[in-house]
Length: 274
Image (cartoon, rainbow, N blue to C red; front, top):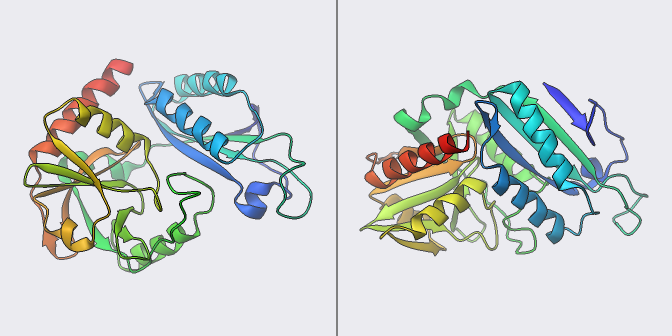
């Protein structure tokens, strides 16, 4: 793995960085295919939105874009992670004296486990670890990931690949690594992420694609029984793209036409970017 700090090759960061001290920052994870950053415009938009919502110091995202393009040309296939922190500051929570953000970029190999998911689908458990509710940070891919760490501990202990995650009021939010969609009676549902969860880049793109179809789409606060009664379930993120869910707990699901159609559309779109 190779990493850069503010454009310079570096594998160290100050112990006083607020990302380490307070989780004060955010990140995005980009798929590199054939030397191109997939959905790069959407990833940069995510970073810009998070910067604004968290009132981060100004930074040159145009320069970052150039760096990402050059890294992708060298890597060809892999994963780029962009992590932004508020940088160093004095002791305490106040950010008023933080003038310069830190931009950490790292590149790694593409996970082998993702290679067959699009065809084979995946099985999910149902996590007993509930997400807290906070509209101020909902949707952001911020650095406070302890809930996800605890969920992953349960996933590993129970030998699942991933798990459906609920919020503390019992509503479906996402999986630990992806956004969820399901289809019931020709209506496509996806969880409302206004109080918990991550608004993924791929989720946003799928919603845009679905707007141009005849499908009815509803963003909902739904209990697990609603999800389990679905005719078709699929999930998505920027690395594995669109993947059918074939089982949740003991309930099996058929691979459906909606997922297959979106897989084709995304494959075509991503190929045209390259």
